[in-house]
Image: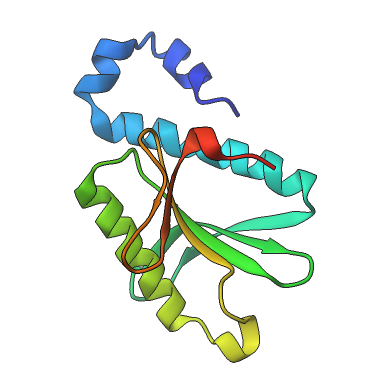
Length: 133
């Protein structure tokens, strides 16, 4: 579903959204997940959410039909949030049984704005505008 419907239903505008970055972050996450689902469907991929018993959460694990997989965290931006997302992705990679699942083809933090770059730990940081099928 398009998260702009929630914004319209709540009669919220830019001023209110900037005042509540937590809510804006949830809307952004919904927007990115909607886009990822469209791209996944077009490429015969499956998307799931990951959470383990130690409260490690990852927003999206995308798996192709051949078993190749990647993981993505979604953050509005900012160094602190990006670093938190990178750490979550690295923890996920360290917990996966790579003999069974293989290495991830990519670990990605999707942000709202800015430039794409490779984090020092190898995690890709990409703005939503660069996504595509």
